[in-house]
Amino acid sequence: MSELEDKRIAVLLSGGVDSSVVVYEFARLGVHPDCFYIKIGPEEEEEWDCSSEEDLEMATAVAHKYGCRLEVIDCHKEYWDQVTKYTMDKVRAGMTPNPDVMCNRLIKFGAFDEKRGHNYDLIATGHYAQTETDENGRKWLCTSPDPVKDQTDFLAQIYDWQLQKALFPIGHYMKDEVREIAEREHLVNAKRKDSQGICFLGKINYNDYIRRYLGEQPGDVIELETGRRIGEHKGLWFHTIGQRKGMGFSGGPWFVVKKDVASNILYVSHGYDPETAYKQDFRVHDFHYLTKCLTPCEATFKIRHTPEYHPATLEWTGEREFTVHSKEKIHGVAPGQFCVIYDKNHHRCLGSGEITI
Image (cartoon, rainbow, N blue to C red; front, side, top):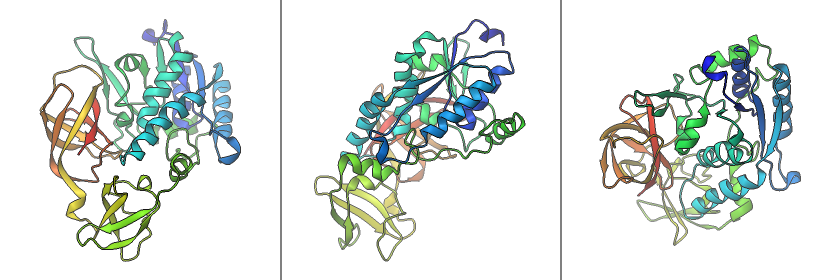
């Protein structure tokens, strides 16, 4: 508690159980931080089924329970101008973006800091992540003990100054432990389901989100091995490399293995685990260091939000460019994805860069 006594602390309270337990963690130490609910609404409220009203009710109840002030911060314009633009630019180019990653950098630790967070020493969130400071005073982003819920991959693009201010009070817990605390404390959202899908989109379907901005652009679906046309897609941006569900073509399962953006052709392969869907070596550029460090040659990595960490050798070709030589073949490697790099023991998250193939 002593290290928090003189700190001005802001808690980003979403209405979910995780950030609510963050407020409890402070309250049990006698600390009553200011709470903030970041409001991101759809561009035209009447067109979308959004859960933000319920989220705000939950956040209000939790803040009141622990005697904390709650303020609503409208980051609507920043989200749609910045995160949506990033997402649409990437999918239009045939890449696989990660809006949640950029939302942390641009909104939760970005736009919020510009509006109110700059008045605070620490910004606490309900992310499953930890931090530690080494003997040289450098702060590191570290993984949660819960491999399924760990969210360091979603934080791997935040700036170093944002990491300095970040605080993750529940990062040392397993998800079940957080639920138990919430039920014991009779929090209003103790049994509420975790949100699914993209940050801030609520119940909006991702394809509807894309269709609103990019529309449809039908093109041929071709079997890679034979060149046979098997159907028509509604737009390359509705599909991701490695996708094997929701294709809607007979004779499946089919896997998306390649996109030809110039010709608007979607290439698929037949069979459960086609060799063409796997890669062992791929390039990463524009690597973003969370904490400046020596470039490692041995590391572990992730390319999507899964519990598994893959061992690899990194062949550096520049300060921020390298080729990943994975020890095992990886399914669904796609341009535009973030490759998140960890140390050999997948304890410290070193940063992330964009995959180029």
